[in-house]
Amino acid sequence: MRASSLPLVLLLVALLPELLAADQLRVADVFTDNAVLQQGVRLPVWGTTTANTEVTVRIAGQTKTVQAADDGTWRLELSPLRADGTGTTMIVESQEDRQEFRNLLVGEVWYASGQSNMQMTLRACAQKIPAIREIAKAAATDNIRWLRIDEPDSPQPLKRRQKVTPWQLDHPTNRATQSAVAYLFARSLHDKLGVPIGIIEGSWGGKPIEGFIPRAQFEKQETLQPLLALAEQDQLDALAKLEGGVIIRNTAGMPGRIYNARVSPIAPFAIRGFIWYQGESNAGHGEDPRNYRFKMQSLVEGWRETWGQPELPFYFVQLPAFKDELTGWIRLREEQRLSLDIPHTGMAVTIDLRDSDIHPANKLDVAKRLANWALVKTYGKPFPCSGPLFRSATVDGDSMRVEFEHADSGLMVARKEGLAAATPTPDIALAHFELADESGNWHPAQATIDGSAVIVQSPGVRKPRAVRYACSGDPENANLYNQAGLPASPFCSDLQLLGWESNK
Image (cartoon, rainbow, N blue to C red; front, side):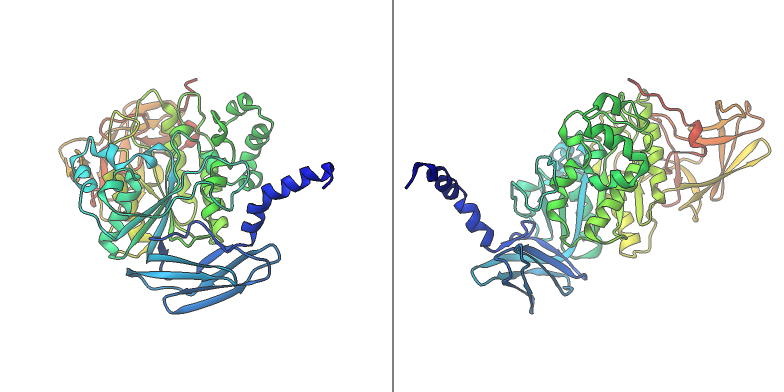
């Protein structure tokens, strides 16, 4: 052998495992033993194998076959399956290989994501909430399962995960390390629906929404185009100074980098919808919460496009009360409320779940309120899913009349303590209402309930221009509820008058 041929031979030897693996049957790594499959929809199954060869999938009495493309990729769709909690096996075969995925259940599957309040574990919440401690240590069940996606960020959308983790069975030894919101949401759904629940969870603490949005959405959304341009030029200081700018502290905050690693590899695995808890890293010191609603729109539309389903439900958590000096939280909560204009969305209001920690431990109420939206809007259950949401404000002399959605049964003044239901307090006045005068200056106001509306007046305002409620960082007693005991969302009838400072 000539010496000049030696490097080429060594290279081929080094690449041999990969070249061989390219022809092996590979199934998308979101499929593992113990997975939960979505009931009642066509189920994509996909992967790679030898080019132009056949792949056959067998499960629950049905057999589907597809021929791989020239590049070895293949995908087929199984016919809808019925809910099944007994466990079944899926067999995937090619000419050269056979794989089995055992103990699969069929039920409801949701994708959960966000930042640290979604990632916060049952164990962390259990340290402060005895009821959650009891849930965390309860006996093992076979009804709830989860898959944690924990990939590092990626500059390009991934087809496969670098670190393949399997679906987990519900057991107290591993349950405590799971997302409290996601697990408790799943538990609420299972209690009401009686079918297996699967959670795929891809949250990442301390990260802004930009990392979760598909890059293509930044190009489509005119408001976000300047952000993308500066990010790609690595002009991060200038990016932070934009209207709606963000502080990018590491590569995971760059447009699309978390999406590439924690969403792209598992799509289009069949799911029922999404739950989301994020916003803190777009509203802290030096962070500009303006335009967050456009970012939410890009997030929701981008994920729905990834799955090819424009109506997939998307339910999210509004930021709770926290520190009056963080006025960005006030504006971001309003941006979240305005995001409800996106079709097939719902918002869990948490302004009454006060906690001095940026990571409130009461994730039980958070999860129940998220589950209410899913149970009513997705599964058709007949009970209230939301507290009062601002509909309109009209001037009537020196007062304003505020109308609400989700208030048909009437409004009440109430107070919530701990995990207990909100208790009516009819002898206590409504708090945290303000009126703006003609110059846009805000004045404390008195508010009274009139059926499903609230009448707001202030001695200092003869001609009111706007009204707002609970628009402080940490309102001590945001006490407007509907008769179902669900809290009203903070709101401002004129976004231009909602104060915000950068707190740089």
